[in-house]
Length: 250
Image 1 (cartoon, rainbow, N blue to C red):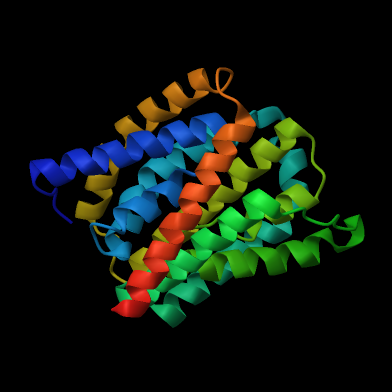
Image 2: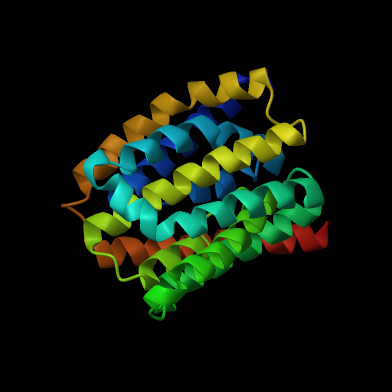
């Protein structure tokens, strides 16, 4: 992957700033926003390769504090195993995200994510079933990740169903997203979609993502979370509908 012309590069940088702002405000959304907008101007596999480094670093940041990492990881270990298995199996089965199929799947994933954000109320997961159900949720998330580059469905609803306290939930999402990012990179590498050039371009997108995230964290206490969430989810639903319609029309 080589860097695009200046106008397209400016648009890509703007996408990562916006995605970073969203993650800074609500704790998630960087890959979702990045894939949704970048897929409008480039192949989904290229977009997925670009988000690897910004997603990995911002999620490692979110996975702290390290003192509580082991305790949270023990509860979601089965889910992380499922993510790895599902993503790698999906990469080998489906190939890299490309063409109309990827557009339709990405659109449907965005619509599902928005619908969950607006209307979803995840059930409680019995403690004795956490590892088995976690593995299943992780495996489904992994296949969706391999197909679309988006790794929030059904991972985030499942994590919410564990009834973790606020800080533990944020940390669990950071852990899960980190594992998904590494698994996605491995899947793209298996399909020849994550080269040294793609990694270099991805590193360049880290700075705008971090700048956006810092801005989002400053804005977090100044915005109404309810209003922001409503606008965010409705926008994702519209983007998803457009992606799916464009893929079906193609």
